[in-house]
Structure formats: structure tokens, C-alpha cells
Amino acid sequence: MIREVLKMGDPRLLAKAEKVLRFATPELAALLVDMRDTMAHLNGAGLAAPQIGVSLRVVIFGVHGNPRYPQVEEVPDTVLVNPILTPLSEELEEGWEGCLSVPGLRGSVPRFRRIRYAGFDEQGRSIERTAEGFHARVVQHECDHLDGILYPMRIRDFSRFGYIETLFADCEAPPED
Image 1 (cartoon, rainbow, N blue to C red):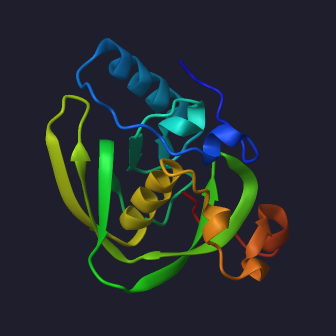
Image 2: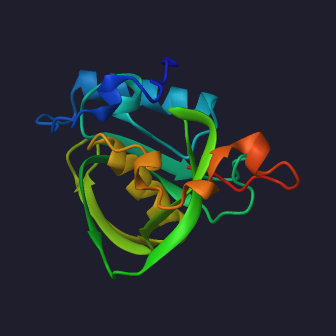
Image 3: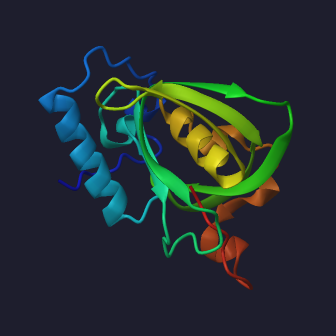
């Protein structure tokens, strides 16, 4: 079922999400169906459970030939429960981001260029991967939602934050998360 995505200003987006304690449950499966349906309907690259009002440490992400992201590398479809992110270097990379919870806006956000992420899939099986570039950016963006952080909170230069149609009036807007 397609769910409403909470918008910036809703206090539920600022709360720290709770750990998932039980895997392979009908409730978790139903949540993931709703998250996938919602993300697909909006052509998103990722979605965190808090964005649809569910305060659990669950994110999904994946990009395959998405019209909103024509110039980015593919990102594998992933369910990540109770994630832990580890930067693999201190190197940061600035990149444009948008968010389904912050519609119509884009901002340039610094993120770790290379990370390792670990957690579990919906069955409780362990996941551990390294990622860089857009893949790493998507994972960091979605996992921030689990700690009540929206991408505008990470922006350093507010001259690079604004409405898409204004920032990119003379060119094509870059892909967003």
C-alpha cells in the first residue's frame, strides 16, 4: 500500500527510531511492502520507516534505471534493518541531495565518500557491504532518518540550498536521494 510520506516540520521525523527486535514477522513484511510500494510510486532511491510514520530502524534503497537518476551508478535493492555505518576514511564529498520528506528542494551535502554498512535483512540474516559514491550517499541519507536527521541539517553552505526550479533554472537538476 502506498503510504503518505511525512514532510519536514513533522516532529516524528526528528525522533530517534527504535531497534527492530523480531525478524521475519508478518508486521515487518507488511511494513516492507508498504515501503517498497511508496518508494516505487514516488521513484525514490530510498526510504526510511520513520518517513511513513513508523519509528523503527528500517531502511530500503536501490536504483536501477530510474528516470530520476539517469546518470548514477546502480545501487542494489537492499533492506537494511538496525544498520551500523562506519566511514572507511575521513574523505568527504559534496553532492546534491533531495528528499521525499523535503519536496521541491535540493541542497549540497557533505557525506563520507566510502563507508561500510552492516545490519540485517528482513529475515535476520547479516548484511555487510562497502559502498562509495552515490551508493554510499544514499545509505547515509536514509540512515540519517533513523536518528532524526534531515539532509538540510547537514548543509554547510546555504547558498547551495533552495528550490529546484530556482537553483537549476538554466540547467538540468542533478539526481537526488
